[in-house]
Image (tube, rainbow, N blue to C red; front, top):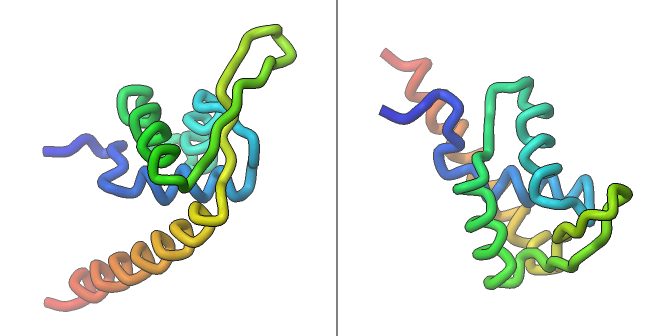
Length: 109
């Protein structure tokens, strides 16, 4: 049985949405944003997030560059591409359709 905090196929949507609001964000900040914005309900674990970021970069939805943070440490900062914005719209539309269907099932006997 899946853990209650698992993202169940919504990780791409969440990452793309976070990056649409916060361009040039590094991976750890994306993890924190998902957790904080969801009221501590959702968690993106490193073992899921970083492979997803690499995959999204490979397909052209995001781009990454190395930055030096205020602490002097280097990190990869991610931002959406034009293809990523289109994918975000498609993912949001799909999510709305799925949640509407689940709600219909929950309302029927």
